[in-house]
Length: 409
Image (cartoon, rainbow, N blue to C red):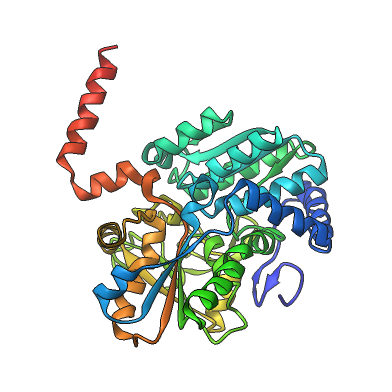
C-alpha cells in the first residue's frame, strides 16, 4: 500500500464530510485491533468454535482423473458457518463493533450470503440489523431472505437503479449517514472507502493461511495456480493472500455473463469495457459510460453482479501479480453440473466461475503440478436459479404446485 487507503493509484476514501468522523473512529478501532495480538487470537478462536474453521482442503480425485492433468484441490469455504466465506469478515467486524460500542449493524448483500452472515453475527452479538438488497436479488435469492428475516434482520428491497448490488450499497451508505452514532456499516467485500478494502482482506486472510498450510501438508508442495471468483473480491483476496510471497500464479475469474462481446456481463479486469473512476467512496475500474454513469451488469451469479472491483485487485492486475479471466453463464452451469456429478460437491454459482477456468487449464498442466480452487460458497442458496438454468421439468412442476397451494389458502 503506497499511502493510507491507496494501492498504487487505486483506493482512497472519497466520502461526504458528514461521515469523516465516523470513518476516523472506524480506522482507529481497526488499527488498534490489528496491532493487538489478543484481538486476532480472539477472532481465530471465535471462528474455530463458532464457524467450523479451519475449513478442509479436499482433493478432487475424480475431477483430476477426468481431466488427466494437474491434481485438483478445493478449499471448502462452503463448510464455513452460513455456507460461505462471508462469515469470516462479518464476525471480525462484529468484534470491532463491540470495541466501538455500537448497537446496530447494517449491510448490503447481492447473493444473500453476506446478508445471512451479517444477520447471524447480529443475532449472536445482540445487535439490531438491517440488510439492503436489490429487488432483483431479493427475487432470485428468496431462501436467503427467509433466513435473514427469521434471525431478526429487517430486509429492505432496493427498487432504484438496476435493483442489484451496487444499488444496495448506495442505500446502505444513505442509511449510515442518518444513524452514525449507533450504527456500523459492515461492508461485505474488499471495496469501498478505506479501511474497508484492507480490513476485509485482513479478516479473509484466514482462508489463504489455512490453504497454504493444508496444501503443503497434503500435496507436499505449493500449488502452481490458485483460482478464485471475483465480484468485489473478498474471497479472492482471502485465498490469494496466503500465496503472495510465493512463486504461485493467482487467477481471478469474473462474470462473463452472456459473453464479453455482449455487454451483458460484469467483467471489469478481464474485459476492455471498464474504465477508471470514482464511485461509492473509492477509485477503481468501473463498468460505466463516458459520463461516469454506472452501466447495468449481468451475471447468473448475484454475488458477482457488481460494477466495480477491489482497488487492491485492480492494483494487482495492473502490476501483473494476478491474472484475470471471465467465465460465461453457460460455462458456469456446465462446470457446476460436472462438479456435482464427479465429486458430490455443490459450489455456489459464484464459486463455479473459478471452477470454469481451472477446468480449462488443468488438462494442459503436468500431473506433477497442483492447483487449488476456492469454493467460496455452497450452491443450495441458488436452487431456484440453478433449477431454472437446468430446465428441470420436475422442479418447475413442484413450484407450480406450491404456488397453486398457496393461492388456495
